[in-house]
Image (cartoon, rainbow, N blue to C red; front, side, top):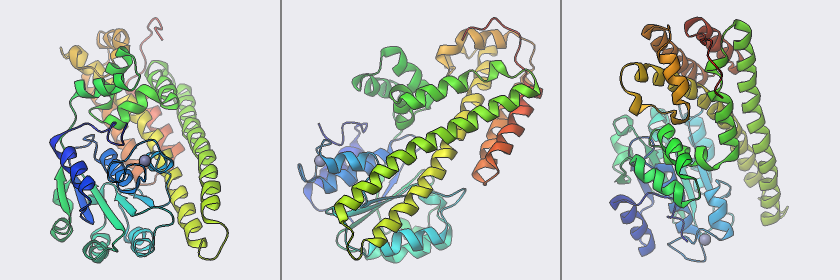
Length: 382
Ligand SMILES: [Zn+2]
């Protein structure tokens, strides 16, 4: 077993793993590639390979260090991601620059994984330059982005640039089957994930994500009256809150782990603070992710109805709903309403990213869906 097992193997990832195994590792990396090309998983595998003590430079995938890094639960591996639409300069100033100049708490190397790096405000990109140029010996920065053109040239030129390709659907299916998913589940998850391996893995193997999708997939068929819209919005919000509660439990365990590792001595406060901040951000992001999943799921259903009506049945994403999709496609809803419904979901997602009130944004979207695409009276098949 190795930390690279879950990463789709390509020329690029092989080159990265070889470079890390050689021990001569650049301090700053920029992983580029379309959404779903496994950039984040590759970055996490790199962080584990750099820190594993069982198989240094390789990453055994089984030791405590590899496992915690894999779960994003290691105090020396920092994940930085946008808050709302951007990564503000404050986040870089507070969570990257000072941390990057401290020694690791327990690992060999500190690793900063900056997700959607193109969303760093230009001030944030500028603030990062010095750290990128002269990092501490024991610090590695990994920037990941699918929009290279929005990064300053000065950022790019300071990093080792690696390009990853999107992962073909059949490869995702193979990966999922290898990891224990049934054939049918693997195909469905791969299709729904739109080429995103991590999302596919959650949809195939993570019980909470699977249960959530069951809730979300039932929503279009229930939206008949305004009351249904409010009910559905409330359920989606409750689902997000439950996910946050679950995560809070595991965060508590992480705080206890850290206390065990560090003791209560002097100088441990900054570690505790950093962890508390990270946890807060993580919760906000998780809530956002669940709400986003709900909207994406709705949009994909209405899109499937359109596709099915116009001869694209082979391309539908919700493979397990094809009977309902065909019934809707044969119904009276106009193409224009279906298109508007998809657009409304996309808009609501954008509103949430701009920090709209989740309950209000969700209710507004659902009420609009009742008006645009009220569920036809069908025999319930789910
Ligand atoms: Zn290991």
